[in-house]
Structures are given as C-alpha cells and as structure tokens.
Image (cartoon, rainbow, N blue to C red; front, top):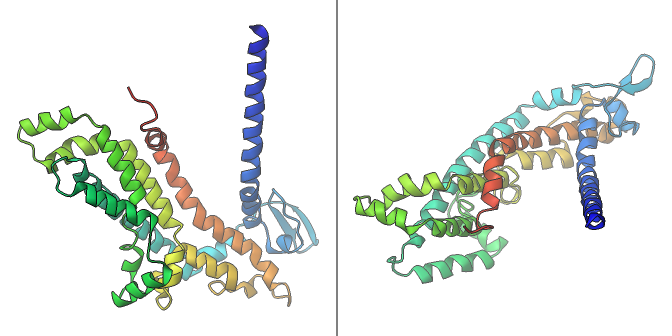
Length: 304
C-alpha cells in the first residue's frame, strides 16, 4: 500500500510538472509581448528584448533593463485607436445584453410541452448550427438589407448562438418542474415564472454565456472586415489592430525613429503596446465571472 501511495504521489507531481511546463510555454509569448511593449523602440530594433523590458540610453549608447511607456503613449494619443476601444466596449456590452436576451427568449419557450411545433422548431434551430449559406450569400443579404457600413451589422447577425441556446435550454430542463407548477398554481404566468424562478436559478450559466458572448464580440474581426469598409467610426478594436499591424496607418511611426530603413522594426514596440492595450480589458473581466464560469461549465457533470 505504501508503494502504491508513493507511485500515486509521484504521478501527481509528474502531472503537475507537465501542466506547469505547458502553462509556461503558453504564457511565454505573452510575457515577451509585454516586455516589448515596455521597451524602447531602439531596443526592439536591436533584438535586445527577451522576457524583460530593455531601454536604450541615447547618451551612452547602451542597453539596460528598464521600463518605458513610450509606446503606450503613442497608442493612447492616437484618437482613432482610443475611439475604436470605446466603441468596442460599448458594442460588447450591447451585444452581450441582446444576445443573452435572445438566448433566454429562445430557450425558455422550448421547455414547455404544450408549445405547438416544438420538435420542428428544435430541428430547424439545430439545422442552422451545422449548415449556413456561406460568406458571399451573407454579404449579399447584408447588402440588400442596407446593413453594410452600419453598426447594426455587428449586432444583428450574431445576436444568437444556437450552441449557447442549447446549453441554456438543457439547464432549464434540469430545473424541477415542481417549482414551475407550484408557481402556476399560485397564479404566476410563464413570464413571471421566468423572471422569479428560472433566471435567479440560472445565474451561473447566464454568467458563463455572457462571458462567451463578450469574448466572442470583443475578439470579433471577420464580420467587421467584410461589412465595415467605408465607415471608420464603426471599426472595432480588433480590426483597428489588424490595420495597425499590417499598414501602420493609425499611428505615425516616423516620429519614433527618424533613421531611414528602421521604421518597420521601430513599429514593433508600438504593435506590442497596441496588442496589450486591446487584450488586457477583456482579461480584467474574467476574474469577476470566474466563480460563475466554474459553476457554469460543470453544470450537468454531476446529477444529484
């Protein structure tokens, strides 16, 4: 028994070591990116940055460990980038609220047995999850609806996820029917049952779906690239970041390095700062929803 116990402990240490190793591999690029964003442009040009910020002393022409907010200053002073950040924040909040509302309104009626055509409705909804018209038909549809270069094109097409709706519907099925029946006996209508019983009991799964919707919208890129071409005021942060990395049109990099031939490499520090600027806000939201997220993803794992 003691030998088996030692083997079990050794196995636990091996698994823990593998997990730590994988985590370090995953976060190393992020650490390097953070170090580049906090380093001087000259340090990035000379490949002096690894996992610690490096600054360049222009007087002594030396490189040493240090932090500079030069790149972040250029990002924050760019009005187009900051406007895209505020617009993406507002867009994420609006899309999350609308998507949760649509998900609840779609999942809740399907829990009632007396709803006519419930099987057909479920089949049609699931069919749309596996089959779609494609990119070009969707573009033609948005064009015919007059949604091109319209902020609604970033909200309406993706306001409901069938997968998330199925998750919420499965959770609703797990709520005892006796609660609903007792409320109906007391005179509660379906809307009251939803507000007073189902939604309070669904806080973990709703928080989880809200996180899914928020992250999906914050990282949304393809729809803006296709449908927002002539309306720069509606460009979300990820598309603006893509434009920055590829064209450097939103920030005048020539002010960072005036030496000819070094502008493409001089922009690396600003690119890193822009990526961190676009990534950190959504990471800050996660700790607030973590406890709901853990409960939400384990729903249905244990039946009592």
